[in-house]
Image (cartoon, rainbow, N blue to C red):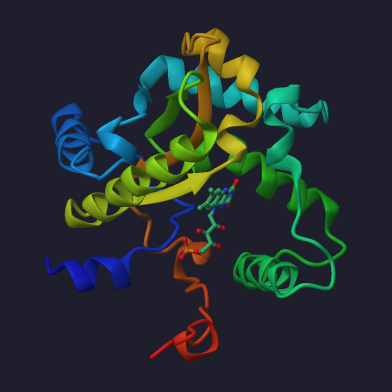
Length: 224
Ligand SMILES: Cc1cc2nc3c(=O)[nH]c(=O)nc-3n(C[C@H](O)[C@H](O)[C@H](O)COP(=O)(O)O)c2cc1C
């Protein structure tokens, strides 16, 4: 597939077929993706690929924690930050939420359906695999997030080429203590983000949502 087509085709997938992704495919995606550039070639990323029984355990533990409305550990406090009210960033966040809820027929006041939707995120959208991206705490945090972002986008694009869908998600790492416990992520690693990955269920309503983008002319300044 052409790169431009893959970039345009990629979108967050929040409903998956009950079909495992071969380990060889996941490995190939990572092999390609680690060609990402990084600050001073430090490659400050590591991956925990979770499937099968540990993933089932993780989904349940995350969902249980959310159901008890437990706050995430202090190291994950940033995952609760919302865009500032009155900014375009907040407007865009609200807009994508409305689009997803409309697609899923979740009403404004339907608290139970909204909670079920949140739970789905904590279950990695019922994907057959999740990739947890971590960095080393000895690396500057700015490098870690920027460099990890590059490898994360590579993973999402490479996945498209294999007919797979992905959803990058903070929800999947919010309860970091659960991940550290079940996936055995050491304390000297910083949890960056999770990627749910699997074969898209094309009939799942939220998968039909195309998130909008601002026009480039509104976000570019040409100095010439
Ligand atoms: C760092 C990051 C964290 C995200 N966390 C979540 C999440 O917790 N739950 C979710 O449903 N989507 C999450 N997303 C997906 C975004 O909502 C999505 O990328 C955005 O709305 C644009 O839509 P698109 O990916 O379909 O183009 C996250 C994306 C990024 C980059």
